[in-house]
Image (tube, rainbow over all chains, first blue to last red; front, side, top):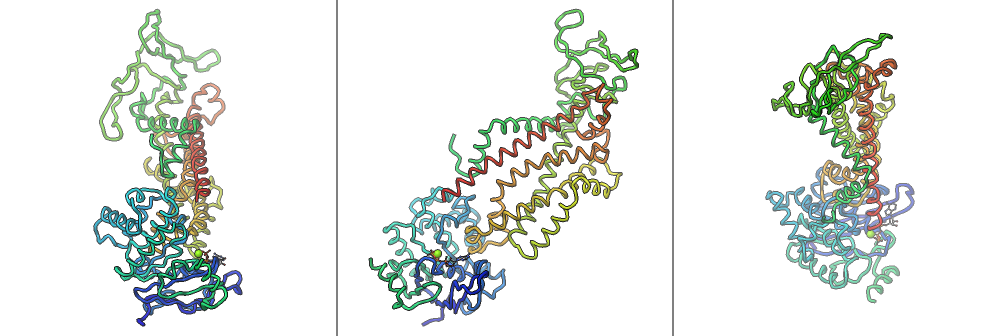
Length: 253
Length: 363
Ligand SMILES: Nc1ncnc2c1ncn2[C@@H]1O[C@H](COP(=O)(O)OP(=O)(O)OP(=O)(O)O)[C@@H](O)[C@H]1O
Ligand SMILES: [Mg+2]
């Protein structure tokens, strides 16, 4: 197996206030280039916390006891702020679980995507118009049929599903090598879920994108992921663990 | 009209549906327009005075000539005399001086550059028109209020812009970065806020040399007032930023690799606008009053230049107010300006508030 592009090694986080409470305990995960790793776990098992940690954000309320996040072998938690900022977005991006709060309500969705593109120079020096074109193309890539309307909308004017796809478009618009998608399908209907799965396959095939796909049930993850990490109360558990079985059977239903 | 979609549009709609706020806006608009066009609107310039007319009461505008013929708006001559108690009295003389609208008068530069000599209304010398009466040197109070508005109204505006620029930036940085930076900045704020405003004003004014030309005094007052004003805002903005930086979209912007400054300016500070816009509007009166206070005690704008504050210096004696109550007119203008800013500021705050609540429910 090739060296992982992104890996977590023994991540252990405790609450700052109560150092005895573990939010993540010795969690490891490794993502090889062009692969999809599924992270599955019940509500409150620490999936979102893990996603943030993978991007080098330890929530303020928590404190890292041990562990590293490795980007091509380099510890990003030890990187300086400037390098980390360049790395985020350009190499790894995160699509949020709560798409409704991940957009700034003051700007249109299009403006925020354009801002991201310009911040990374992903419009190849073509000016604002070029960035807008690119934003539109990514909105339609994310499965939005009328990108021109969506682009001009304020976040609160979009349905939950549209927002979630717009969020995905924003995460992809800088063409990162790794996408961490936190429950990207939670507010989509079944057909859209299937389309999104198809999109992830396509992105992996065509752009060589590696994905950490987070979900609370096994349903779609099982069909897509090359590897599974099952989280239960902040720990990685084996597939025959009772908690893991409960998740599995929920997926069968 | 299309329904506005942005937050700003909605807030504006709510603001304009408030009658009192709209009235306040019109009053302020009229005052600022008058200040801008003071040269045209005022019959006399700042330098103009008439030794024969100290404390001349407001002139009556007549339509009928002394012999009863209709000759259109005009004023009569005014002759000063003393009555048996040696009090100054003015008697109308039979001379008639027609009001000339857009007549030629003293030349000036319109908006500071266009040479022009027309005035909205004027009478030929030696007639004098005192719409709101005259001061101790026979200067037209109406004209001086218009010229003084330039100083009094703009000092508030510029002062507020500067101090809010500083306040937003300092508050944003302190709140967003936190830690040591926050500690240092907040201690500085507290030091500024610790000293009672008016003493600080006096102390700072004392630190500035007396022999300044009027423009320098004007700039010095603005700087002094903004130096006092920024700290309070910075503290509130910092408090708001502390909670705003926890929002998901700030984290989202960080995951997308935006710089701290970009995030502060684009995704944190705009959310304080509901507060800061109202606070800005509500703060303007403080600056206007600050300038008035300085000028009133002779530390601000000096004669012959006018500001509403230094015009009121004449009204510091109760005796003078008794025989020439019209010298209080500048106080009236300060009053309505302050009132209008307060009404508009309150309405702005109300216009944004229900929106913030609504957004909370919809998400
Ligand atoms: N800021 C915080 N302060 C204290 N505890 C927190 C904080 N954020 C998360 N937690 C705790 O950490 C645990 C993991 O939370 P996390 O959001 O990662 O769960 P999750 O697996 O994403 O759940 P869900 O499927 O509901 O999104 C939870 O028990 C939660 O209560
Ligand atoms: Mg979560």
